[in-house]
Amino acid sequence: MKFLFLLLYNFLEDFLHLVKIKKFLKKNVLFKKSIIFDVGCHKGKITKIFFDLYNQSKIYCFEPNKLLHKIIKQNNSNKNLTVNSCALGKKEEEKILSLEDLDLTSSLSKINKNSFYLKVKKLILGEAKNSLIKKVKVTTIDNFCKTKKIKKIDLIKIDVEGHEYMVLLGSKKMIKNINYIIIEIQKNSMYKDYSKKKIESFLKKNNFYLLKKFNFPFMFFEDRLYKNKKFD
Image (cartoon, rainbow, N blue to C red; front, side, top):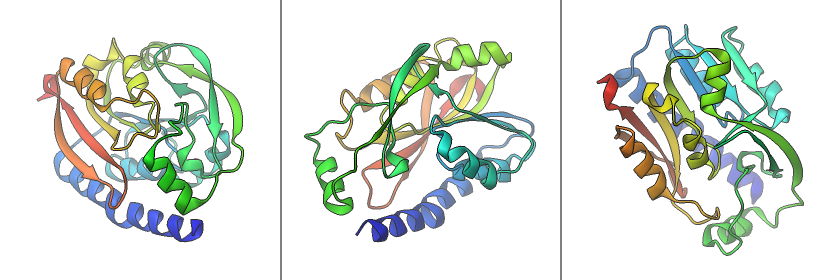
């Protein structure tokens, strides 16, 4: 069952979901030389799309699971790629990362064990094996940009399994200098204290408006593209 699920998931992601995102970006989001952040890079699939569309860009990937770094670099041989092993969040700290057997669900967020979605997941994938617990360094968008002397981010993608709001809170200074944000929105209760409304409120307060929704077929989440009014 797990093998079939992963086969279906990867097919939907590679040939439907990411294709939709790429087509929309190609037509509507135009850059030459740009700064792009891929937060929660996983295996670098969307990073590759960014390089295909914006081949002169400097792309910073953030993936605390070091086991995936080799795959990210294999998928993206561009010299303008920088892969960082730190996570991004609300403040400078160390946090516990649960490295799941299914690596695309590894998260800094706490799981809601009463979640209906979690029960469905267990039914399909079986009972999860014991997670590998690892301490990871967490920094903020503001501090990272200050260290690297980055003044503006043209596009940032945030997909961190329920931890997205914390990443946004770490950008209180830089948020006004971010042009586009692609962010994963959960439509389930799998993560404790997750709030879609807080994400929407933060973005609205900082002059972002919703440009496009990309629903992932048959799954309980979607990607959203937001635009900063400042750059209209």
